[in-house]
Amino acid sequence: MSTKPVIISCAVTGSIHTPTMSPHLPVTPDEIATQAIAAAEAGAAILHLHARNPESGRPTPDPSVFMEFLPRIRDSSNAVINISTGGGPGMTVDERIEAALHVSPEMASLNMGSMNFGLYPLLDKYSEWKHDWEPQFLEMTRDFIFRNTFKDIETILEKLGKGCGTRFEFECYDVGHLYNLAHLVDRGLIEPPFFIQTIFGILGGIGADEENLMHMRRMALKLFGEDHEWSVLAAGRFQMPYTTKAGTMGGNVRVGLEDSLYLAKGQLAETNAQQVIKIRRILEDLSLTVATPDEARQRLALKGAENIGF
Ligand code: KMH
Ligand code: ZN
Image (tube, rainbow, N blue to C red; front, side):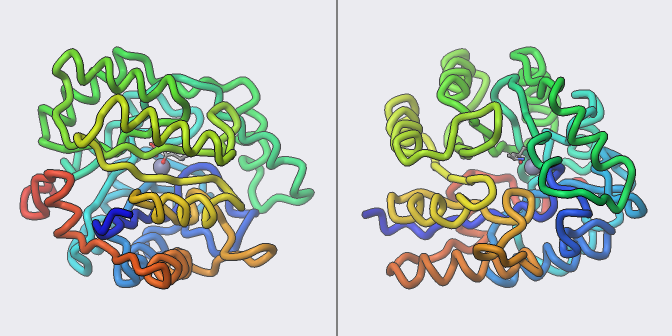
């Protein structure tokens, strides 16, 4: 078993869930900042961040909304700030990268392939909605392609990677995405160490099945060997079991309300920090340790908090 400390990422709000689904989903800049800072205090080394319209709670790519919470997080925590370039359903690729280009963060997400991204099954779980946009947003994903062409990926690598010195959380939702990453590595467009986030249980991506977890792990090892840091996130009820498995297999973990609204069966998480505390406790009970933000910076070869652009 690896003795390397486990890097905990926390994805604080995302763009999958909507306000009706949980009163605890952070929506306003104040809620996002407060929950992000508490998650970092609980042990998250990396904060993966999206923004939402403060009134409606709808995901927004607007850099000025990001700027309402990012400086506060930076001033109150040493955690690595990681800005999503996945954005949310309906946003163009240009919109998705605007905030990251604006703030030149240490890390940003980079999604490794185009895919269906079906959120519409969530429609069946609720009969009343806080906001009109929510059911329309979920229904729209029946006909939505989450676009991440090779050209899109190259553009993000060029503008954000080369241009800003930002390094990436490579989001891999299926085996082909690992091969897409390997292809870009072969072309010399990406330097190690690669932080590979393998994702299980998104409709359109690989399912949450233990054999898939093992297969993604094996293929990442085969393709990238010692050059990568492996991390796992799993959607919904798979979050804790799959991150626990990843930790015991020498991997890193991602939790947060972006990936699951729950703390346990039938129990909504009241904060992101609760999920961080839970996975940390599980990992420490299993004699694992948790990485500090500076350990994560060193292992992932990040440029340092002093070099971010805000
Ligand atoms: N929503 C997650 C499944 C991104 O922000 O770029 C993956 C994600 C994508 O976090
Ligand atoms: Zn995200």
